[in-house]
Image 1: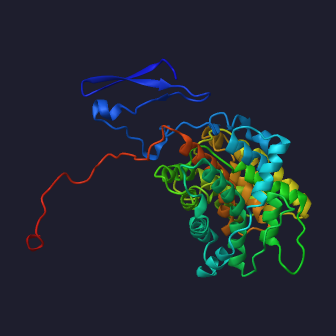
Image 2: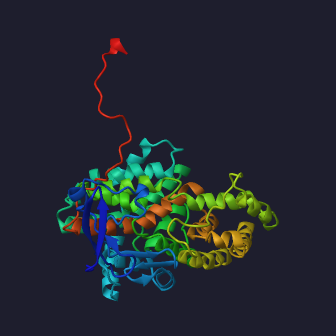
Image 3: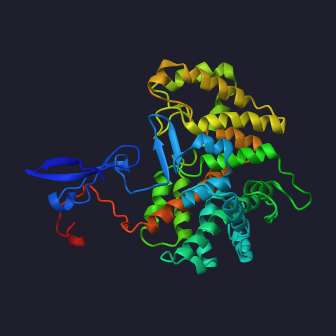
Length: 428
């Protein structure tokens, strides 16, 4: 807590509000007593200037292109860590010892199977249902199958439900894909890694054994790490808001999945891939660059710029390297990657994009990787949800454990009619 005070004068009243300091990042003005002392609210659509909570999980400096999980730079974690290790870090605050990681991985692995009756739940969906629609429904239904761990006031219940969510989301995601393509569900296998198991459940078939390609497994693991948490974004805030009412964790994560489904949040990598397909070959890039600069043209460069990052997205550097590794391992050559590289080069050296700080973000490359591995675009947001579940669970646990947390209740600036009397129907 800082000793600084912020002064506000309104309607002839002056009040002092404390200024709080975090470990790093901007200070915040504590306005909790503003309404009580002045009768005024703040007005902040989108809450872009409002800190809604204390959190020790993730830090972002958009101006400098910094992303830290529990203090560790995302680039170091993506290069040297695994998704299971990062999951432990997000949940517990510190990197695990070898014994702790082994125990945690063992626990998650032993929770990957889902209740057998849940399999029949899928048959209620149309075959052409979007996988995200299935994810929303099935994850929300988990509380009906695992109601023995839904007491949010019990730390042990919270721990069990956290492990269950992280473990079962890949199984459910793979089942959603299998259901959409009419193939039988593939059960998890305990001798595979978290990511390798997911790849096998997604692309394996009972008729033959599925071999996990190490480079693809590592690429997917990196993608999961890069999407594991991203501070108080829309879906995370949704999970926290739902959780503030005391809702069970399965319902809270289902709410986060529903929010992530929005194209402005989780659909950006699909939009970036579609844009690259529209551009086609590198020789057409100048035409589309010119269109992107034309205010009267609806075309926009997807995968460039970010609401938070005003510098190069630190996750994009890892993604660019990973694309090449996957292509080399799978012996594929995708002209879209060459188009992406050329587009990035031109945009990074064009004064228009440099001035507006429109740098490539993580979505610019992730769609290309996922497509090369074999995922249809309808699965892109599902994979995002899979990875982000650990962040949502960590944020939910942090919120529930915070003695100062209250049920979320944003206020408004009312612009409707003032009080008026009811007019009987025959007099209107």
